[in-house]
Length: 135
Image (cartoon, rainbow, N blue to C red):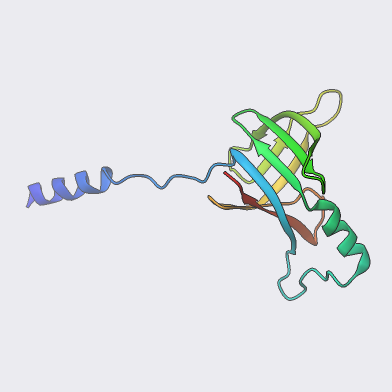
């Protein structure tokens, strides 16, 4: 009996731990979503549609210490928007952009998976951006 208990403990101890999704990689803007699914983004609203269209082509890149944002122009060329060091908070729910000369920017992560990044860079209590992994 004690061998059965030992083998059971050994089996469960050797199980691989679930790996957290990594933010590192290339992410491309897909759409905006609201926190309240009953009130979806209304692209018929001209102001909302202009905001959505202005974000199309936006790409975020995260490596192990730097964040970079780029924008793809209609002609296919890429325009840099900015690059700076970042951290992922220990709880993995906030991206912190490390600024010099002013307070750091902190952006809540709504969801992070192997294929989707939902992040609030608007400082909005209504909506956030959805990106898909490109690499």
